[in-house]
Length: 86
Image (tube, rainbow, N blue to C red; front, side, top):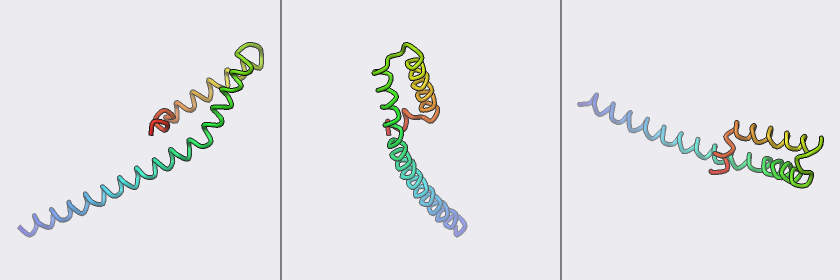
């Protein structure tokens, strides 16, 4: 019975430790997501503004369109939609 009790106590302690570590991980990810939003929004808005202002024709327009596509692809690679959704 003593061995069973010791195992049960160890399991409870391990569960509490894992629960605490999981909460810390969630807090870290939330902080990281918040910090990533700050520089990304102005870059995205700037590229969108250039795209709207200059259009998609001509050499400059094609460059802006390429910038938009590259930015969007990298953002998607980083899981940007997950970051924005929380």
